[in-house]
Length: 454
Ligand code: NOJ
Image 1 (tube, rainbow, N blue to C red):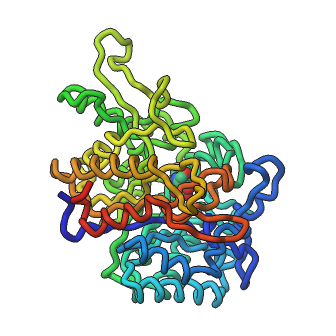
Image 2 (cartoon, helix red, strand yellow):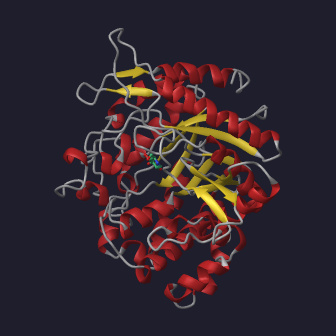
Image 3 (cartoon, rainbow, N blue to C red):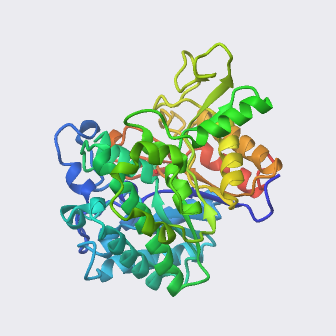
């Protein structure tokens, strides 16, 4: 059973849906310019127009209402509010988010706000971005402005969305903006500055509005027991928090980001490998990074099954990621609902905070059928399985407080452009027509029954 006050929602992010990239005084971001480079985004797409949500937000809130959402997770565009990242505030940006928040509240939908969903203001990037220690102060100032303007009506804020991906794919693999391939000598410093930015922002927000509920949104590939024996569970728990043993994947570690925030410490195995790249005097920042927060908000997309094995050198086998014939999404991501169950259990055990799943969903090959509808049985099956798994986690004692499906609308899927559709609502990107998919209607029933009909 889910709790009586379980929060049912869906999520989006600013650059992926707003469009209006150059309108009403918005400043440029690293994504605006990255998308203009040759060959970096599928078919040269960009978020210039995206879902035109900036102009169509009322229609979109009406769709949320039809889907029955109780909560909606959006992100703010830092550069729409502060075009240069610091300094002068853009009144039109504040007005847009005020209008959106008011429209949500009028329709009985609770807003959850993410401050940073990857769209770093370009001006700040030119000043060194997350490599510059001052970025922590820039971010805290932005957080303060957000809470000053919206904190009277919005009570749930999240600092960073998937900082793992922001650093890993933006600055190490270079698949995302700004497309750089840096070494740990630089990226480790970035992770530290981002964690410091988190801590300083939490402090700043609490000074203005002590009643806020604040969290962070990490993503990890959690291990789960292939067969639920005590040995396999213990192995999965350990592997889930070990430093990932892959030269370019280490930022996906759960503990590297979670332990500083929650315990004020980097994990020992991480320090051994990367401590040398932390900035001088990093130890003095740990108290600031460890601000009390109110919830942990992981995104979940895939896990990996593991099993103790005496015959293997490292003592276990793993069906890591993509074994032949595994169930997978249109993006070719493996479908592993058990991973969600164990991610919620392990995170709650370790950090002892309420868990909100802040994103979960899949891309499908959605089309408008001859009957004019969008039938997406695979999405319904995926969500159903993941919600059942999450319910098991709740029934086993993990404090599971909410679930946000990714995503409300089909939208700009970063380097994949508009080629991957994650929405409960289909968007025709030529006409901007929206159609609620079968899954959107199905989700309404789930919400109405508080998950009893699963
Ligand atoms: C997580 C990211 O936060 C979101 O922006 C993205 O669209 C989904 N994953 C799907 O890739």
